[in-house]
Amino acid sequence: MSTADRDQFNGLGAKALLKFSSNERELRDALSELIANGSINCVFSKFEINIHIKRFPDIPVGKQLECVLNEELSSFCVYPSSAEVAKNCDLSKWSSRPFSKALLLVEPQLSFRSFEMAALERYINDPRYQVHFADYMGTMSIGDEAYREEGFLDRDKVSLQTFGLGIGKNSLPYLIVFLRYLANLSPGHQQFWHSYLGGEDVKMLPPYYDASFSGTFWKNRSVRYAIIQEINIINKIIYAIYGQKLFRDFEEEDVPIGVTGFLRPTKANFEAFVLTLDKLLSDRIDANFFKGKICLHEEVPRGEGRFEVMRKGTISLLEEWLLFDLDWENEQGVRNVIIKPLREVRRLRQKPAHEFSKDSFDLEFHTERRRLLAAVLNSLQSMRAAFSTHRDAKGIHVPEWLDAGQIDFL
Image (cartoon, rainbow, N blue to C red; front, side, top):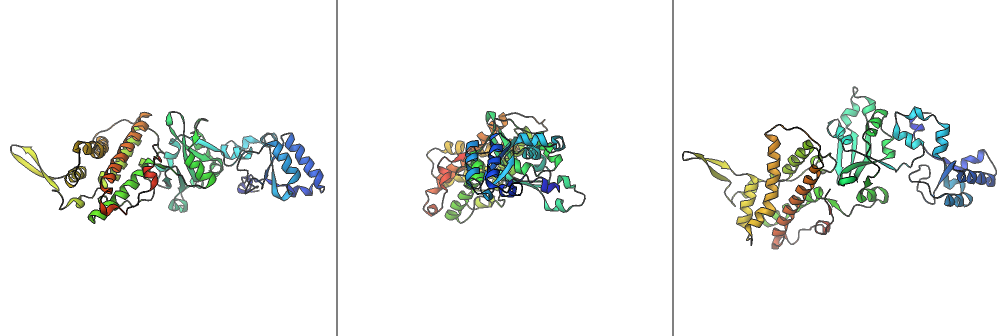
């Protein structure tokens, strides 16, 4: 038997057992006895779409006994109990594959493990792997080029069909991976992931649960996704009013890695976060938009009566244009709510660009990260609100979740 066949961990169709006992009543009685004494469990098509894979925990023994006596033999599969497997298998042979071992011991394939975010960073930082994110979940796989490369070892040609977000103590995010996907990893990678196991108190986020088990798309969205959508909506509104876009188009479909919740609270990751966030914001403001609206340059004094003509930064251009183009009851409020968060992100980005600093781990980085994301979102929502009353912006659709408190600050 090949490794692939051995690792399917499929159940045995009850009807196939008739070759050992042609008397159906005797077979059902024998199965009932084995269920009652904890030697086997059964999965029934009455409750499962695929009886050959044990996806969920066993139904109660009483319900199993009822179904064994009344359901068609072709409609259920038999599985040994964990205790029976342990008695009859040499588990030491599976020590290099802890997640495959868990399936061998008949743990449900859709049970999950939680991991520290450091486990994923190995693949994020290796360009031979492709890691994609979509709010509460993502995928990881070896890239096509590396997969075809002869010198790239087969043991490292691995993938995870999906992973998701979980939350532990202190609102610290963890990776959530289903056992069935972990068991497909090579022995070396299973051991690597096993070394980053999280605590048992980690809870899977409801949006990932809903998408995985009920196939329903999440009602809430992350603050990171909301920021990108606000930028896109502002662009549509500004284009409808002025015939130009304020922000350059964002071509990537994924939420950029730097602003996802799938990173550890380290100084290096926080610096990467503010760098990515600034690229989404001030770097994308198109200075050409302001041509003919305000002056793009300013005279900067250099001493001794000398001046140097300098191009204004995009945030300065945005501030000047907003104050010039619209009537505001409180101009300082505009600076505090709309402009200040953008300047803070730019300031935080510039600091690591001009000095060396030692990396560190601190939960406070997660707190600061959420604060900045909330401030930036509020800035963009305020800007959108200011222009959305314009008569030319009336037809621009705004998703209901953006204004309905359905945004997760994770």
